[in-house]
Length: 105
Image 1 (cartoon, rainbow, N blue to C red):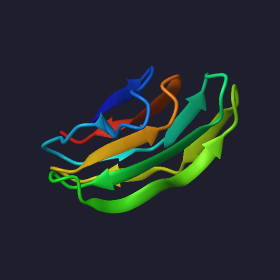
Image 2 (image 1 turned 135 degrees about the horizontal axis):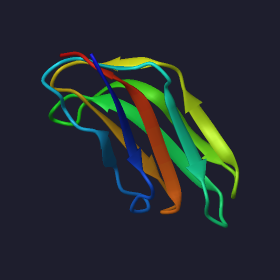
Image 3 (image 1 turned 180 degrees about the vertical axis):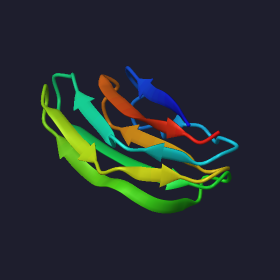
């Protein structure tokens, strides 16, 4: 296994974005995911595991609000199977998403 982190310093508002792209081997995100809202407005955020066609397989963070300037939502550890990905969304562009874990080799 090798350690790896994935991050988005910001996103396009109200656009679903890939945080973890498909890997050939399983990905264990042991530390989970942290989402922070740095904007001056509240942000509605969510995160999912999807298949290669973007069909939602699991909800990591259901749609919820992070107040302006609040470090906010945390997802418990999760595993991303080969060919699947983690997709995220926020209504505010000044939202960051960070995950860390291991990629099986």
